Length: 71
Length: 417
Image (tube, rainbow over the protein chains, first blue to last red):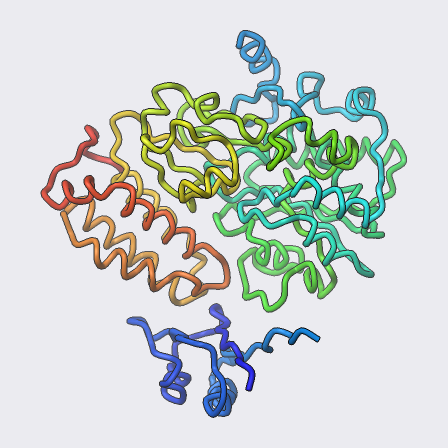
């Protein structure tokens, strides 16, 4: 399964911390409560990541498309 | 040498700009004849208008890079934007206080820039050109307006709109410029796609720095072989530099790539630490300067980047740590305050740095904060600030140690607050 990247829309993020609650495998919080994304998501974590993206109160988290595969 | 001095006084512009300007080999070749269109056309003839493919090929041949600081290959940008309903944006806003090269170019040689913008617009099959000028230099806007009237009278059919950038550091960042064009606040937002793909109102947008357009106009005129008349085989062409841009006796110069740094800086300045690339730049020790040339590759090998061509030699008697702490205070204040890691991280970094420099505090906290702000914002402001601070720590470990013991080698005790 391909990797997806989690990207934060920084101006939109208001440090609610929901993403780190739902996705501790990949996201931790810095000292001010803003997310630190540690690695790309793949496999089972991808479903959790989609949940986290939907749950963000300010819609500041996005999964970006994996780069296109060479034909 | 005498000729240069004579030209300097001749070209000291009346547009309200401070820096000394001397005649240069390519872009600044005609500045002593004034900024008018008639002398410009007399000297160079009509501006050629190559097709997009030809322009992309020439830009690739000479490896033309963007001159706004990031150094992105222009050919890639141009090829990406060469689609239907493209828009051209000339960014002359220059948010960096120590850079004056774009303002100087727009003031002394506006038609050199506008020829480039016209060539790009023609190649992209568009008439829509936006020019972003700094609101803190109203005289620059008047000069550009006058130049545009001259061109319209001479028959140029472009739809040009001027925009006034806000006088803050991040206003010139690409996404902030697109916000300004859209009528919103002139601040960065998150870019999900490159602006060449989806920029102004979702259209393909060729947004580049004013100097980049000037190089493109020159390239379209003389071709890749003519462009390579200056510079080295690996790095053809010239570049604009701002020397001492925030200090005493600032100067803007156009030099060929490969010019030794020793030809640009004075002997005394070669013996001082150099902040290269501006407030978002990198410190170099004086021992790294001899033998170094104005060359992207040489400078990259020394662990720095030429950025937008800002050279800030440390003034005699100053301490690089005290200077950095003052710059980071300024940069923290220039955070737009929109992205959490920057809004919180830069003031924390400024405080940790003040602590290190003035009270012998630990470097560990400063390093930690550099890591915490990097790549965590809509624009590169936190990254650039972290780069400046990290270079201070790596270049001046002895000074950091002596500050920990309460010793400063600078002989100025009070700098800022």
